[in-house]
Length: 62
Image 1 (cartoon, rainbow, N blue to C red):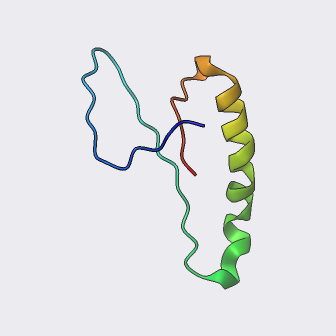
Image 2: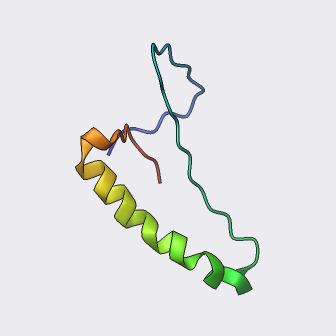
Image 3: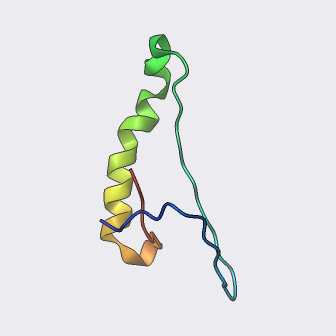
């Protein structure tokens, strides 16, 4: 797994570049059921992206 950088960084990129951020916040433990589907799909999505470099995953932290 890649090392997680804790400082701010910038990129000097020529051409198109996309950053996709995905996160989840549970505000009430009594409503965990509402976010369970998205939460349970995340590991599968990350495995698929990590296994296929052509999909563009540069790294992830968790």
